[in-house]
Length: 119
Length: 119
Length: 119
Length: 119
Image (cartoon, rainbow over all chains, first blue to last red; front, side, top):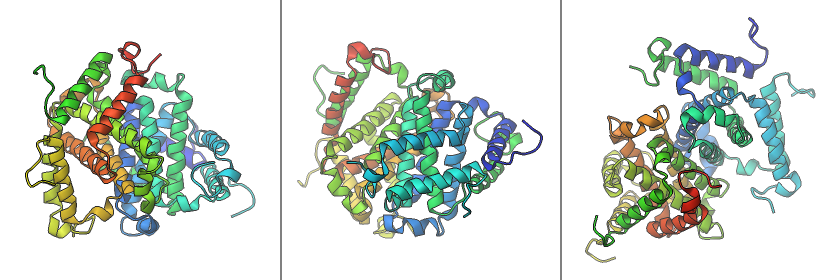
């Protein structure tokens, strides 16, 4: 690790997350099983923000008074997910790109166009 | 937006995600309520990979034969979470950083050291 | 425990669940942490059945071709939740009734009428 | 519906749940999509109670000071899941029994004995 911060914003935040965990000596709590539970827990909190909101109101809801709460839950989902990637040695960007390639093969643009399933 | 790809890796992947959704005309499905459900669904798939694994085996499990499956689920959690951030106009890095600041205040390093709760 | 099956249908099913676990020697896997993960995993599968379905189509969707899948996921959520109650010595009906009393106090009928939040 | 309460405890609680919803005029909020989100949200809260607890401490944890919180979350998972069953016309006991039959076929006792997967 160089002494200067990395140019890449995601790499910067990964370094900050590692420092955050190290300062609290939280590594023993952050095994992959516990982190998967943390991701599920934070995803559940996000669901609770939107469960009674009508779909057609959901965009406006996310830009209204609930916005800070929704941002907090999204932040926690991202934090715990990046922590798990980092714990097991997965580069988040590469992980996303490889899954996107699989999703693209599963949902070809011409057949998936405008439909959530694929004929 | 310039014609050349951005230097930042996360900004690159966000552009790719936007193109992926646009090519399939999936914006109508991707309201915040549906995306929150997708995040919860993908988090559930991640949980299923680790639910019967013992904590002390969890790191090795994530580097064994199940690794591609776990990477796929982490990829899907990241993809859907970034899509929701993007849908509602939140910068993912800024969202993480603001939540980390709140978490740091809630769990001061000296008091949270080596414990999951705070006295 | 008597030799004859109990009259109560829930008590019957609890006995069947206990036998199911015992026949497979699954008790070591069914500690409360693992069962909580199993519940989260099954809840995620249920979410996946409805994430792209419009709210106004959701009732019909649950009575259409997807009905057996939705019933399966609801079955698994109930099975794993009853198993966790039983593991830790909670009577499910009593657990529901005590939480309903708290919910009734939190959402008084007159003030909660027709609204998901309470003023 | 008869004037006397049913003998079956589950049927009693289903009647109480229906009355609870009716008194608050919550049926419009309780479409299957919203209830699936509520189940996911409550499952997430349960996960949060156990995510940092070691597996070998999980049983004791559920009988310690956190017991009322865990009972509350289990109560909410059961309440929302029964509400969704009831909303779409599924008998909970029959739903469990049918899924148990599928699980028994998928995990034959002799081959699943003492292992979470099946060879």
